[in-house]
Length: 81
Image (spheres, rainbow, N blue to C red):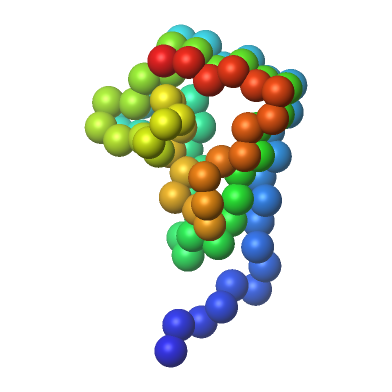
């Protein structure tokens, strides 16, 4: 039987500028991992651009790696390669 998490983490990033960063693996801008994939990520009022991940990233979200409960929620933000 799989144990359930004691809490569910929601990570909220707001009013941020991530530019020209990189990662050898995943998450040139953001690497958010929930070990049991129960957490969530919200990005609001932010700009992310030119943050390459050399090996892996969440499809459709350049520079971001987030294995969580679902896709990142993006509000009033831009995410560009």
